[in-house]
Image (cartoon, rainbow, N blue to C red; front, side, top):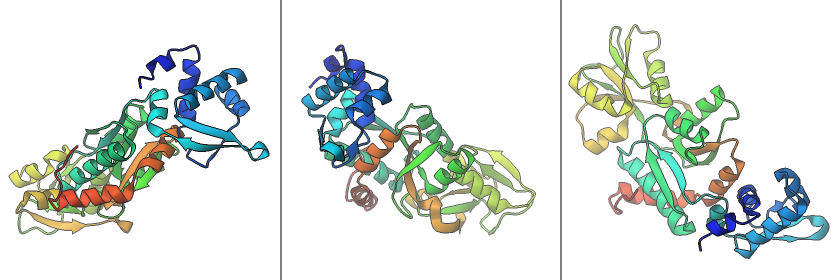
Length: 308
């Protein structure tokens, strides 16, 4: 059904705003009363009641009053409610899909959301957790996939800016981070080395600085996607990078494994803007972590063709 006409009606704006407010509520949740909703939206009680009737008439959501116990959701269709909220497509930001692990994660997210909920979704691919999070905070994307380490570090620097919606567990973002060396005999960072650093990548830049410590090195700003190539050519001496790309490309390069506490750098998470609690709760409800991980594993094993 085309819901655009519904939003063009006299109470269309009220319908759209009410639909956005109700996105976060699930079946059996207690919702605000009509009076509370009218006050929240700054509209009359009659307009709020009319908007709610429109949502219910379109089977987007059904709310019943249980007297002094309050009002509760008894049924909900996320797809219809999203359309009436003016959201026809969910958009997320993912890391560049240079590894089978990322391809599997992207395939899992899109497949489960579209098959299970029938909601159109697209993913945009860009390097650097800072860039992906910025797109979410600018309301250009609904969510971003980053490592748990990047999410936690960003939240430390920018309190109350993002929320972690779901996390997928260790080794779902990457198997491990490693430090690559051009010289096959080298095992550790030494003074006067040229070290590649991507300042848009919270994980890569932080781990690079930690590994280099107080060594007198020269940091060379580069894009993460070029790190492996530049180390192989000898244009930089060393760089921290993702082990999965090395394994997938079967590259014969000298590297040493590095890690951080709790393996947060290997744990993939989905983040949303903190000022969008409706989207946060909606995605928390809709993302099927177990199924997404099952599909990721199938892609990694070659049992399923990536589709993202």
